[in-house]
Length: 264
Image (cartoon, rainbow, N blue to C red; front, top):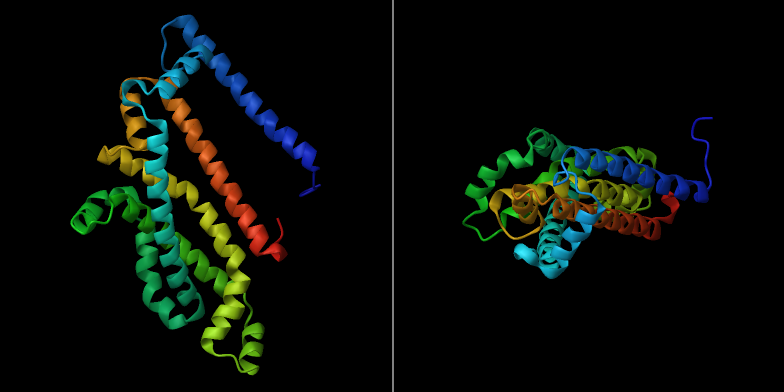
């Protein structure tokens, strides 16, 4: 049956099983690679992973995991906050006022189709002399167009006209309607859409750090890839994945706490 629910225990076991299958598959590919070349570094075995972790802990070769995490986290948080704040204001305005939508939607839709990483040179020109970090600009403007359109659509689709007319009949002002009715009803959509932008934001961050050769996770990945230290690269990728999952779960719990009526 389509959408037939499964128990929480089954869900957890299936999730664990998927990771186990991935590990077994990787172990098999690594074994095959080392049979052909015992010194293979592109598919490190578990002993090489242990060696790579030791290098990370000891800080060999200029590796500073904690420093990279701190620098990248600050850039990600600042960029996401800036982009989400701008998208919240513009998206809410477009969703509530057709005049604003008619003015802003065409350029926003246009820029949404341009990959932010392709605009790195533009960000250099526009923000290089302003003191604003390129990372913040790339992440903020990278997630802004899609998030703004999603918020505008939620304001238009999730709040029916009958509710708005009824609120106006009770004597509410434009601000009260937007704040007390529209915003409250679309808040779970805002949080959910912001959660879905964390992945693209991390892509923009790593791309900027990789290109600008600035200390951070992206720069370390670039340097270790050149040296073919894939045991370090894969460890950093695992850290990125765990960080993304942690942020994802935090936003899910935040949505459930602030908007319990929305469901899981």
